[in-house]
Length: 310
Length: 257
Image (cartoon, rainbow over all chains, first blue to last red; front, side, top):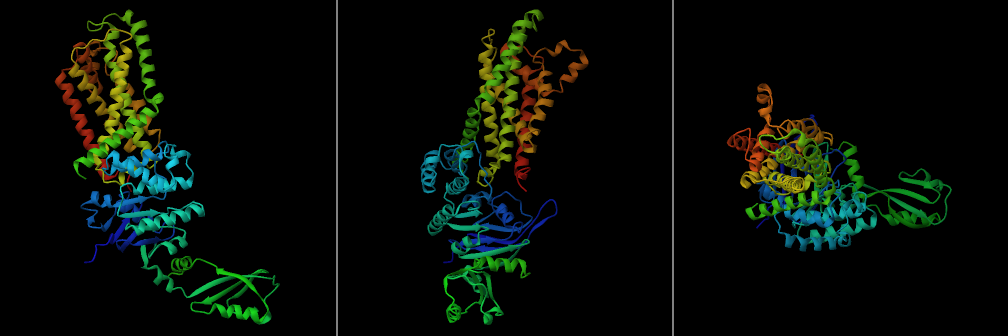
């Protein structure tokens, strides 16, 4: 038996009162249990999509179904399935984390006793238990981000929407949040993520959709999308300084000496990296390390939105 | 959402609202005590004896119900307007918007917070007024019903203000330039029978006149307005404001794009 999708959007449109057309007919399906990335530049329409799902934006046209609940006919049930981690901090700065998460549970009809148990569980899991009685104004940016996640989980939603959850968070906390979100997803919660850190989407998400100028320009498995990448750039850290490339390499397409210690080489997908090392060895040049210049998804993303593939 | 869940959501909003105004009691509960104490000292003890009796009662006894109700009106209104606007301003209103809590429960929750503060301030001011004179009670039922209904009505008014407000200035304009004049001209300090006939007629346009008179009836058993008329008007205004606020919430006015 096939399971109903976690989210279905059909011909979703939004035109704001000032005439700005934010969505031009989005069709999107997110399977249950998926970890789904929704990418796009600022102003592409991602937040409008999320706003419509969360009841913060009225749609102009189209149909949205969350699991088995159509938001036009049973928005209350649809909302009960959703947990939302917004981009901006949207809690009272005078309340404590404890008050915020317990109240949020109450808004979903969860009794006080159960709310307290869950508050302890999620505040502990997200490393906020010791800060539970501090006013949120005094929390660090990373703590506030984690509080948003704890709050969104209080009613144990089936679909978690994260709008740039790691914005402004240091790399250590970001990695721990990735691990936490992965565990949440593995427990069966469907996750939709928007992010500007494309390595985040690449490492976490199984499917990726790209919105540009209110239209969906890509919607596929992350792996399939990365297959489309034809060219990659590698950075080689040279063991000894090099004033210039040997004459026979100097004019070779895709080979560039960025500085005396760094060589960049563009390679077609499927190219043999060993061949690069062999060429360097022939000329007594040693590389002590190699890495991708850009995140692969980032490169594809920029290609798609900048080169008119939309 | 079933009834039990709605009850929980309602209780949560009310608890949050009460916690909010209790946390800042120096700003919410103390000032009305201070202000009304000054009224009692100046108008009751210093000027009152020179004015003499009003409608057969000592002047201080005459003004007590109006002063209590003024505190109730001001606080019920301010509680909801500032709380709802702050929630919009900080965007914490989104906590409720994304939840399945029905708009009617959101409205009732916020308004109940205003009613609790209004009635609490009313009780405190009444207690303070008892220090300055002998509080009499003609009808506890009228007193209790009028104080709750008035707090309810002005909480709804405060909510409407909070919905429309775009800046913090917007939530002080109505109390300063509409509510305060209407309250002062609503017969707190005088019986409208003292006014020329024309101004008596004009006073009848002021809805606060009906509440103050009904409340004064609860204390002293005297009123310039028939009690039935007062209740009818209060209930009509309450129903009208509730419906209007609910419509605005359902439309997402000021909170949804």
